[in-house]
Image (cartoon, rainbow, N blue to C red; front, side, top):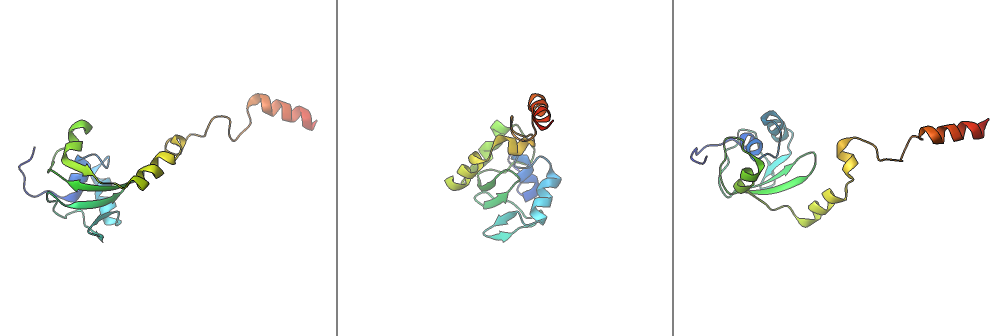
Length: 127
């Protein structure tokens, strides 16, 4: 899978599975969420082995180092061989502290609206 010498950053980020689609990876580059040496980089920037990028996704801030070029999307277990995750421990702790319901959009059980039983009790109390 290595062999092609020129590879765009949007295609690389999609291939290593940081983004679900290549257009999402391109949009992230356009919006300044992908940085190389502190500067924003365009989606057409060429990726080289040894480059370090800071990538901000919806879930996490990544700091990755390119260890190999991957032009086609492969399964996760293979994709992780093509980059090193250099994300600081503080960032990883922030991701773990966010509740799982935050990402799913569902509310936590027994928080928020009253249950049917609680609603009946409230109505009975108010009457």
